[in-house]
Length: 116
Length: 111
Image 1 (tube, chains in turn yellow, purple):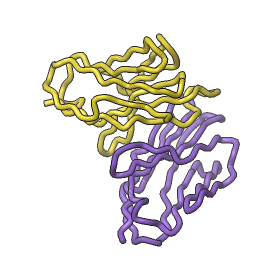
Image 2 (spheres, chains in turn cyan, red; image 1 turned 90 degrees about the horizontal axis):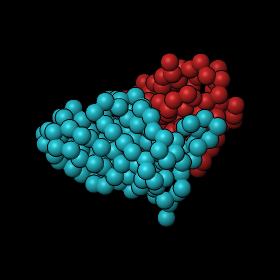
Image 3 (cartoon, chains in turn brown, cyan; image 1 turned 60 degrees about the vertical axis):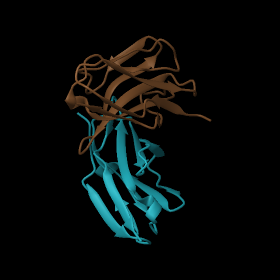
């Protein structure tokens, strides 16, 4: 089954404790991205990757890191989480088209993160 | 800069009513793509439709239909004979040089 998986699904942590949210896709997609969803703000892109070892900032990258060492995996790293990073996070993947994000994205189930 | 506006924050209807969700975008791109996604109460995001800027044909899929009007920069979504299972947050998204999501419309269909 074609899917994007994220782990963990729920996480409660404390300020400053490094954490990683994993993301994996089995569709051989070149493009992967991370979003955060906050009430009244919709989805905002954190980072994206157009292929292995190619990553770039989205609209709200501060406080986050990513890596793309393998095509299928795109982990999101919070080196020193803060309460304002409490949010619902989605990983997504898609094929690459003429434009960077011209194809529909397949989303993971989401990770609800609470930073105390 | 591109922008997507979903002016309706919340809509509440009674089952079997038709409902239209509005989406208006601002852009200077000549080539772009428009999307609708559904987020049911379970939280996942489900792709519904993709439309490119050169294809203004309306589309119908079962009870769902989409009206793309380039002249008014709108890409509205209509659900005919709504059902309780249609209750969800619906996001419109635009992709030109960057992918931008609207803020979403919470649709509640009451029995």
